Image (cartoon, rainbow, N blue to C red; front, side, top):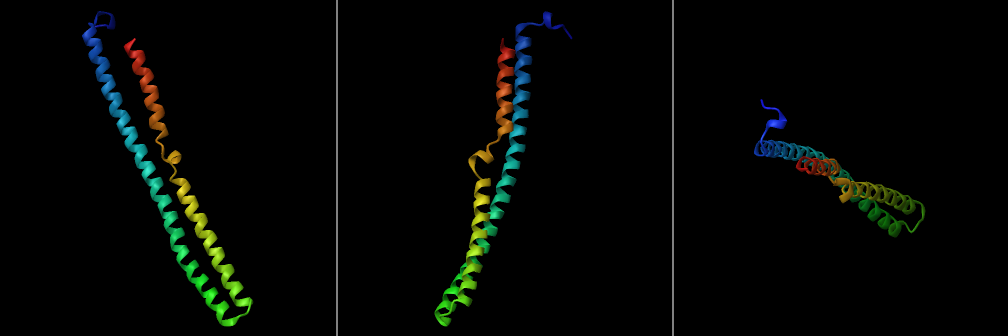
Length: 130
């Protein structure tokens, strides 16, 4: 193998292009891995949203029972208990949905590692060209 000082410019340029191609391939692999991680994050957040939605159904049923009990009994005790149960279930489902939505924000799903690595690669490519 010839030393670097004896190599021609086309040889050096060819090596630089080969290294850049390997680098780009590695970046795509990193991006795929990070996007797979983000997809798993979306799946977990969707599960929380689904859990919140499932909990909302019985909350509405309990709320309807409370209204019916209030109309039938015209008393305070039973309807208040039903209403408190419904409000509690609705609060829990709202919290679950809010947590799920916050985990799917654009900021949380940004492939930060890949973007940082691409920035470093850009700087390395500029250094190669010098």
